[in-house]
Length: 219
Image (cartoon, rainbow, N blue to C red; front, side, top):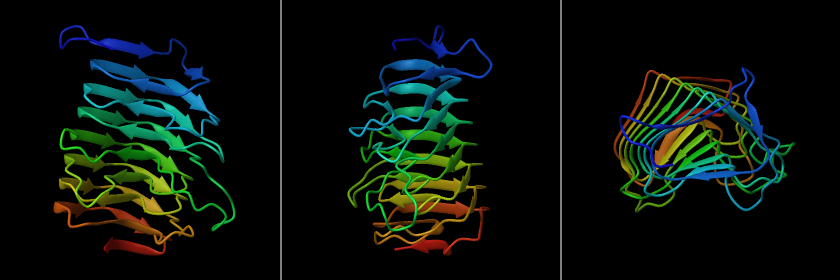
């Protein structure tokens, strides 16, 4: 997608209940909106169902639904800068019952480690029944992702945390709600919010967490 500030690209459904895609999507480029698209019951085991590729900028995914199955490899993956994820439903990412029967972590929204992954806004989404975190920011202790704002999201029935941060800097986790987080069989616990690997300037403020195995954890 190669839009401009004055003429962005729009990919959207013309029906009120959204257009259903039957395959995963990778997008790259600048100045584009993806709106009111559904990915339901995808079984792709090789990559996330929706991915914004490295180098993307000024991009938005909004009003979409992404629902996986027991075999898919992840919900969404973000690389790039000046990205907005807003008002989406992301659920059932490699979800398996009962607890402990699936060790593979798969998250609803995942942000990569690169320093070029910055100015990312994850707002007012619903994230549930993911076999990992609702939102996971970074992977490694050396992660340099920065200036990420996670706010107003509702997370429930996830196998790990609502929002978990690994490395990076200038991370804001504000006014999110989490309930019913329950541990998988990895080293994680079912906490609401937290992080590890010495995130610099990590702000966790005004969130709600209940009916989970913990509230806030810094490891």
